[in-house]
Image (tube, rainbow, N blue to C red; front, top):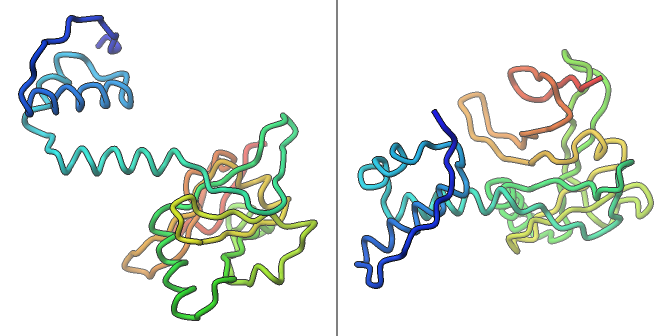
Length: 199
C-alpha cells in the first residue's frame, strides 16, 4: 500500500454544504493520518464520518498536541529542550472538581518517581498546596484549558516523565490519576504504577 501523497487539484468554484464539509474532513485526515491510501480514505468519508465525529476527532487531536504551561521553574534537558508534560482534559477536570470541593485554588497534584515497584521505578501521586512547594526544586505545570489544574514535579522525576501525559482513568478496579505515553518507559506493570526505563 503506497503512502498518501498530496496532489494539487483544481478546486470547484461552488461547493454544497456537504461537499465542502467532506473536503475539510479529507484535508484534516490527510494531515493527521498520512499513510492512509487515497481510495480507501475517499471510500471511508461518506459512511464513517459525521460532523460530530469529526469535531470529536479533531478536538482530541488538538488537546493532545497542547502541552501544559510551565508557571514556575521551567527546566531544560541536556539537549537544550524545555522539559514539558501534558495534562489531559479528564485529569484537568478531576483536579478542578477536587479544588472546588475543597475550596482550595492552591491545590495541585504532586507526581514523584522513586525506585521500586515490580519494574524498577514507580509513580507516587499525592495532593499538595502550591504554597508548600520548593521554588528551587519543583516545576509547576498548569493545564492549558483554563481550568487551573496544576501538576508539580521535582527535577529528577521530570527527567523521567518529560513528554508524557497525566491522565485520569475510570476503571472497574477504581479511578486514579495515571501517567500515559511516557517516552522513557520501555515496559510497565498492568496497573500502570510501575515502569522500566531505556538504558
